[in-house]
Amino acid sequence: MAAAYWIRAKRALARGDPVLGRIIRSHPRIALEPRGEAFHTLARAIVSQQISVKAAASIWARVCALAPRMHPEEIAGTRHARLRACGLSQRKAEYLADLAGHFLDGKLHLHEWQRMDDEAVIAELVQVRGIGRWTAEMFLMFNLLRPDVLPLADLGLQRAIRVHYFKGRKVSLRSMRRVSQAWAPWRSVATWYLWRSLDPIPVEY
Image (tube, rainbow, N blue to C red; front, side, top):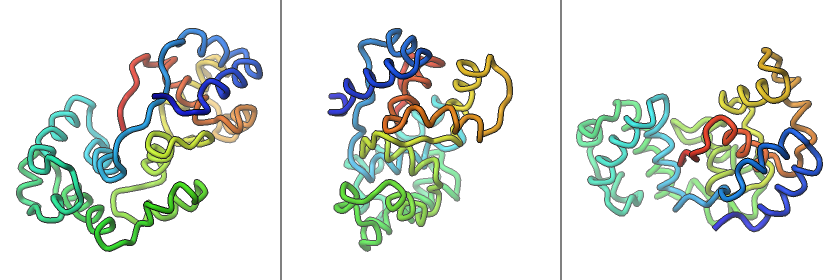
């Protein structure tokens, strides 16, 4: 089920931005949908970093075979050697263990995230090894369904902005940010449709 604000947001964007209007009309029957439990989402994001979609899917399937419920307790109780046998690097095995530890010891206030603003959630998540701002922004968009996230470090978003607003020319992040100001308070929705303009099949995070 799409986010409750989706229809209102896409109508506002289509009225206010002719470029987005064309893209939105080209993708009428798909929308951003929520992605599972918090630990599951973050663990999958860590596994998927800096490798191909195909490789990530294969490794993730093996990790899930070790931890079928994908709960922090399962990962915390799994030796690094077994995680590495799934295809994870030593560093990613450590990252997963650190994530599990943060969930188990209460350092992450996941029950309060819905009431916290975006930057507060990001500040908390980046304390976990292996989670940077981009991963935290993906979590805000795909798990918490926050409507106004602008992951400007995302290469796909940068490319889409260049293609659709600057005729493919290389421009500064400042110029991209200036274009994006017109999308508030629905920048997550604008980003999602700009991604679809490059790849119509949504990627899971």
